[in-house]
Length: 490
Length: 77
Image 1 (cartoon, each protein chain N blue to C red):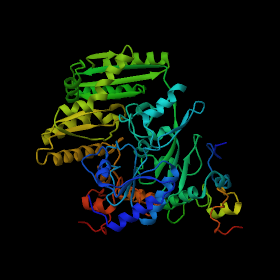
Image 2 (cartoon, one colour):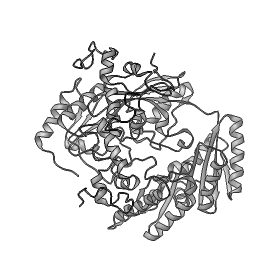
Image 3 (tube, chains in turn cyan, blue):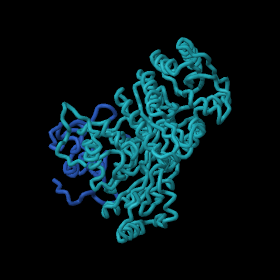
Image 4 (cartoon, one colour):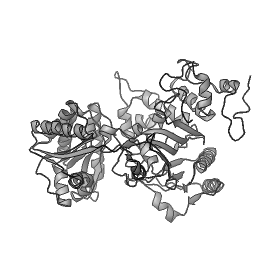
């Protein structure tokens, strides 16, 4: 991926960045650029021509204008914690890093809104809102470092999105610089705004449609009461069925997380938490008013028992609650003790398919002779199967990717999707051809052109070209005909 | 006051003029580009929801920022 740019082009780009006023922080030395060559999808990396670190929206506007004129790629990112490679630099482009724009500009306790710059860390918003008794609900595991701009670009989820929604449900306004360097103010402080809902279009657009330069976020009051419980099951199937039973009974917990035996054992080895011996654990959290929460807790305990839970532990205080969460929050670190490497998937399925899909995933693991562990957001059907392998052994990485592809196909077959919260980036481009039919992929490209006529924004990520889909042979074949027979293949 | 011209009733033909006050030209142009993406021939409910830039210029209701009339080259009236 590391193409060497034409020297003149590099000089043009550096000159354009140097012309930005007030002067802009730029990184261009090879040894310093190395720090920016990947995000958290570390299987791939690339070195950009330069890194720009703007302090203001107006600098971002000037950069976008200059790069559009030069026809040079602009990849924007925040903290670089993305898991699908959406923020990996373009070797012929500029990487725009928003982490210097990290102020919380205002917290409005009456409107319950926070106005922030894009580089502020997710957890910092809640810190700033805490004196008003408010918090920002989306809580991706990376929230201590991951930035709001990146959360919006990836439409990040988290353990509590089951009840409180994804990032898109918690953002009411956006400031965006599009591919022509124009400022767009989308949404606003009202519930609805006139015109097309471009705010929703921007959420999850993975840097394809604009650079997010500001956001107005919805804040929620802290719930009066929270109850957290851990339930043990003798089979994965029984645990999976309990998830459906809870939701089916009309309860929307704040979170339902699931862990299987591979993960439980890894957590025990890594943290010695004294977890129950089980094939599956469910971590269920309910919150709300004090009376309502007590009632819901009793109801959920009853359902867990009737679904065959062998043990249910309820946290008596915040310390015990933190301990129950410790296994889930530390699980991905603990999984490093299973084998040298693992590959985390991010498919979603309808909740009712959970027992069946989990069975099929284990069957695929046996077929490939590979260990798979499951720790995931069971309540919203967002699976994170982890495929274990050893990259030192030839062909194992490729086998893990092939098995991962099979799992995503399985998710689609059950009416699910190829990504729940990690985005497409570079990682899941191929799977996009399976998820969408040709007309849908063409519509994505048309929308991109509307925001970015010159195609400079994060090119080659998030949406595959139709030609690429044709070459992969992954386009939906309908009515026995190959779609677009006119596209040149291979 | 930082609010909007429609809460839940939509724009339609009724509030098309106020759209020129609510949005700046780049934003309106974005709406049109997006419409073109879905409806290249412009057959779907033409003239509703989003005003043309010309119409906004005719109403004289475009946002004037930094003492400059946006798109001074557009023919008006």
